[in-house]
Structures are given as C-alpha cells and as structure tokens.
Image 1 (cartoon, rainbow, N blue to C red):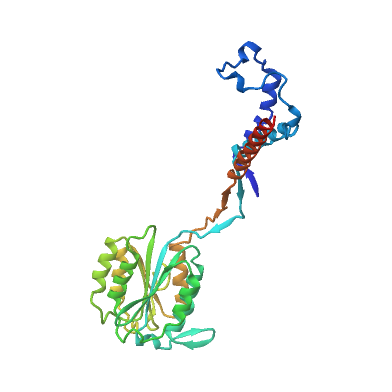
Image 2 (tube, rainbow, N blue to C red; image 1 turned 180 degrees about the vertical axis):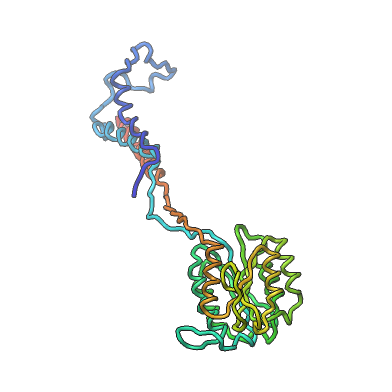
Length: 330
C-alpha cells in the first residue's frame, strides 16, 4: 500500500495563498528595478499579454508545482506485503555412525523389525523437521568422517541426504574423534548457540584423533555435544533423571567415552535401546535446546519521492519555457 512517512508536510498546502492574502505588497518605490540597459525592456503597456501562450493556466501549473513539491517532501513510499523472515536459531550438526554394526535389526518401526540406521533416519528426520529456524548440517562417519550437508535452513534437503545414507559407505570402523573434529571445524566461528548431536553404536576404532582430545577442542571452542549410544541389550536401572539409563551389555557402545565427551562440553549422554527411547531422547534435546518462537516480519519498502520531485521540475521547466516564448513573441 501507499503511505507517507511525513504526512504533516501537507499542512503547508495553503502557504502560498496565505502569503498572498496576508502579506502586504511592496510599494512602487521599493519594487523599482534600476538597470543601465532600460531600453532593452518593454515600456508600460507595450507587453502584449494576448500573445502569452498559457495566461490562465500559469496559476494552475504553479499550484501543481507546489503540490508536487509537498508530495515529495511527505516522502511517499510503497510498502509491500509482509514477508516472514527465517528465524535465526541455533546451528545444529548431526553426526551419524554408518559402521557395519548399524545394520543390526534390533529396533522396531511401525510394527516391523528394522536395523538401527533405519530407525535413526526416521527419528532424526522428525527431529530435523521440528528445528524451525535452526541451521542444520549432517556428518556421516565410519572409518572416516564426511560432511554430507553443510549448515543450511533447508531442512528437507538434510533429511533427504540422511535417508540416502547406507552403512559401510564410510568404512567398517568408527572414527568418533574425527566426527567431532569435523563438527568443530564446521561450527567454528559461527555466531549464536552451536550444538553437535553424535550418535554411535560402538567404540572408537579408527580416525586420526582420539574422541576425548576432540572433545577438549570442542569445549575450548564453546561447542556443546550431546552423545547418543544406540543399541539394545542390558537391563533397566532406576534412578535415572530421564528414566532411560541401562546397565549391562550395550552391543559394544563405549558409554564411558561418550559420557565424558558430553560432560567435557556441557552436553548430556543418552542411551537408546529401542525406537521409543530414541524418540524420547530427541524430544529431550528439543526441550534442552528449544527452537526460537518469535517470528520476525519484514515488509519491503520502496521510496517514491523522486517521482513527484521530477514532476515538479518538469512543470517548472514547462512554465519557464512558455513564459520565455510568450515574451519572445511580444
């Protein structure tokens, strides 16, 4: 819609009439013009007013010039439709283990037995969808760690790349330290809150840097890491704050190292023995790291003052030209 930034400028609209109405005209003595080349000027009564091209319209043009100047002074602008800006939330990087043990079919999804990676894709995909306003990235690791998706607001693309991941594509080993190191590198020098969610079902067996050394680097950089050990086995143990802890065989999960990684960086360690627990863990992380809820609206504004200003100049030029032509024919 059209609006004026300074509409009070229109209060000056009657100013020329007020000046003409209330200011006393100058007397003839004061108005006399003394020039040495008086012969060049027409004498009294010698000006042929009938030859003036726009005798009556001159006043109308002057009024239009004044109106155009006031419109320009009021700063007209066109305000576009509101646009909802993306909410600037956290930078969230997911690191997912693709070692061969992720093929173990000890999880259930929609009544069917599925492997750990399939369950992770379903649960992590829902988590990514909920992170409105966050920039999300994806790291896949096995014997080596790879950046599959850089930080982006395009959450659907990250979900697609996660769903395309297959086990063993990054090697048979488990390079937890390299995955953390790559996460530190990609999240370094980013503004705002930064978190890394690392999911693994084994212990560190490959890579160039140890997990605890990488965690120390992450802690110095202010990166918070949540670690998730995945795999069935063990028995329930009471006393856990979230009721998710277990003891016993964890199918090779190095819980001690994963717990130390989380503690060093200010995060938490969780264990998921089934799909329901995995969903609860991601819901808990949602509560610990809530998404921003304040929507920001932007309305594009285009200044239009130059159009009435250009019109006033054009009308002024036209008025001057017609007056000049009228006098030249006299």
